Image (cartoon, rainbow, N blue to C red; front, side, top):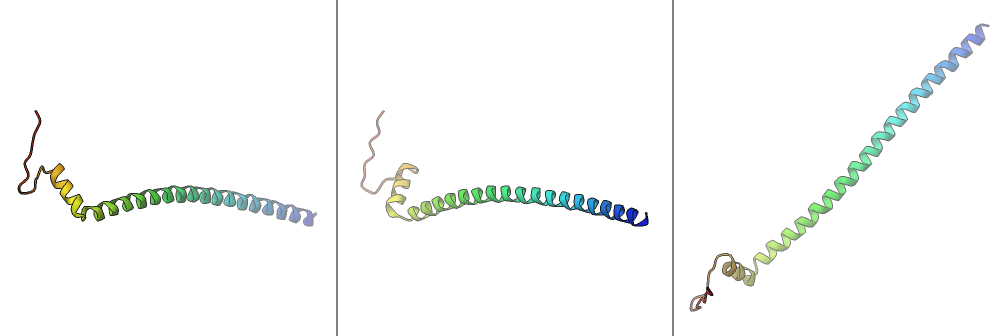
Length: 90
């Protein structure tokens, strides 16, 4: 009878430990899935920022072009070259 009680107690302990282990595994898997989703979102944001950065670099490079500078001076600032005449329509 003593062996039966001991074996039942052993079985209960094993069952409790198994349930505890399964719960821990489930929680860990949930954390992993959350981390994977966060990684995907951060990767998407990184690509978006890299694309915007590339566009800004292209703008900076084109701003150093003399034709671009002239175009900005004419369109935004209304400047003209010496000897040019400006005609305005009413």
